[in-house]
Image 1 (cartoon, one colour):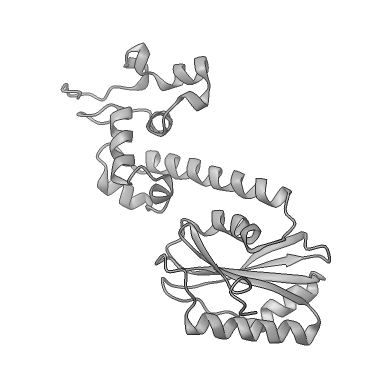
Image 2 (cartoon, rainbow, N blue to C red):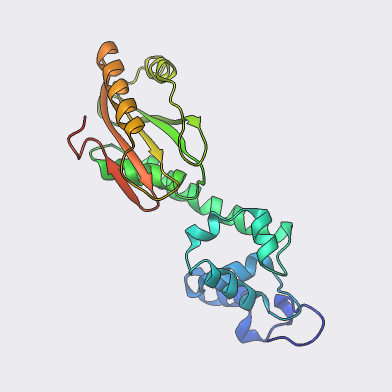
Length: 233
């Protein structure tokens, strides 16, 4: 622990404790999650180095980066001495970039063949959300992705789906097929009565305009429920 009254910046650490130099010499994969976070924040507080503070942050998030990403900037500043808005924003920006990179990798190679494909596409979008969102995936005749779009955003328990808007968008983009997804922030991956009702309504609407409705999946913190897999389509 650091006992003097000033913060030690990364440049003041011993050579063995400098993650920037370690990354330059050995590559990014040689660094722990805490060392990577320490590079982002640059300094700790009067009692902890940046690495020690980063280790504590991750420990309180159960060493789960997804749990850290769900934390708000204000919550991070309140819980961890030495973390102000600028440092919290740096951490959140890095986590967001990681999420977008994962999304880009999935979209570039995506032809939808299963519910797992849908989960891999939507899970990076929804994994950190503390409210419900409802998304549509527009597909061509070969089930390749045309576009994915958020339709609605709701509260912690339910979001309302505008079926006419969903069908209008599908027709405007000349989609041959669609799939939809929404999340349950609670982590409960079983459908509610309203989830069942909206799935039936979307299916009826798609049949009326000649669009294939492939699936509706519910994302729930690493788990998912597929209406198609469960024979409810």
